Image (cartoon, rainbow, N blue to C red; front, side, top):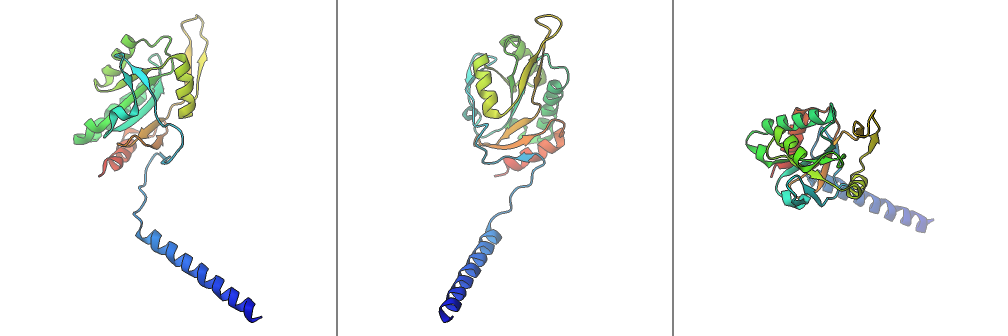
Length: 203
């Protein structure tokens, strides 16, 4: 009986010490940032890409180190989601004020068959001259869509060239070190995204 009591006492002391240690660590650790978007920090997807932009230059996330990068998938003939998102990104940049130049918008087309470099150049620079458009090959598109867990599908139209593209509407947000941090749902608004990016830009 004495041995059992002794073991119980030792177990209680160990558990008590562990609980106190955890409370100490939790109390000393900095508060986790609160975001409007979905926090995906540490995700093992949406890691990077290596795709040509609308000028023919290959781009990677590391090219934008020091900036918060917002990656969005779409296509130039998209009637609603894409222009709305691009317009919101322009507003986000405005809301960031002096930090606006630390935002990098990256548009990846899901319609490389129709979205030529010339067309994409005109499209993205119409919103902001610093925005970048990337043009994957069909094979690269399949790979990057899998890596970013986004959906896209061709929907036939009345003619071979009048098809539309169904696609995921959210945006991925990366911090200045190129790490994926947030997933922003479509329709969240420029104000909410600007607040999140301002948090990521804090030293």
